[in-house]
Image (cartoon, rainbow, N blue to C red):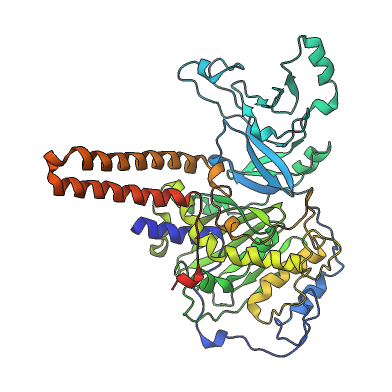
Length: 541
């Protein structure tokens, strides 16, 4: 149970929150003064806006209007460690279906043919991860429903066309001569459209532009990553990555993680307590530019548990830094997001800890490094994410359907939240991010294909299998093993109750049967968490 509790706390930190140590001093309370907020967040009635926020955002206006291009930047999608390299995987990015796959061949006799003919002991070599438009050039069916063959080719399971890692057509089984194949290969339409890919710190990034010049442009653009001084590298501890497709948009995810004020309330009984003092102030540390901004939580002394900064690095990285104690230790939350489709985003995150100067792990952080299986780490993530997932899911869809949010509809004003009231300093990060969205990123995310915002559906929020499990090889393996264990428990329960009374006695047989049944029932509940996880604030006392 101690390991489970530690896992919940770790996941709470990994996935999206700022410092959970909230200042309680009355001197940190916000001094309100009536005024009218006249910018992106203008209100119809007088409110108490964040001090100097108008001046801060006014400096940005016109300086780099609509400079950002969503298709000419690197977007994080998934940590490759969790993908099965022998299967193609479908993901979405900016509304486009993409197939992510590995072109490695098996290490013995890498030939195209049935897997039952593989040489004994052969294993797939790790090749290069690829990202293609998820359409076979032949009839536009999804390549993600195909296969990866032993020779490292991507096989379309509709008519058997095969492609190499560069997207070039290498076989059409219906043809009888190589000359016929060569003729078709010379047609540029026979080639798969591919995107530039980079793996940084284990995370796969995609440059969502398949044009001819995309490779050069992508090479000239850095992938956003957490910067660590060389002198500190040996003193760093990196937690495991977590990922899933969240049921709310990329911009609502960023809005959520730059807002530390929700943590103690929304994440009650996990990383906060709704009944504790929630006093907090936020100030700007680094002013808004086209590249992002940094806010702090209002504690200004040099070393203080509870002091933290939240840095947004456009378009999808947030680093939350929380110093701890007096010996140089610090907790970092390394969080990433990319727009997958309207109303959804790809999220990747982890916790990073800088140890004390002498290399020791601070006592307050030892609980975060508890050794638990990766699948359990992923499983417990639902507890934290679903605490505020319903809010963000419903908020985005309500604003979109009532025309208060531009989403991907250019006909709607880019003054998102014009009817909302944001009167306290803890809204500062949200206001700065929405200002960046409006003035730098065009006020909307330019999704391709169907741009319709889906309706509110709590079942989507609680869906764990499609959001994560189906893509994660660790969770898939654990799910298979748990199902086997469940079967064995129920089998032993029936066997003990029916056939062992003479050996164990009637009482012993009944007790053993109930024990096995109880374990099987518990396993059944754990198995259910791989598919669905519900949460209710009304029941979270």
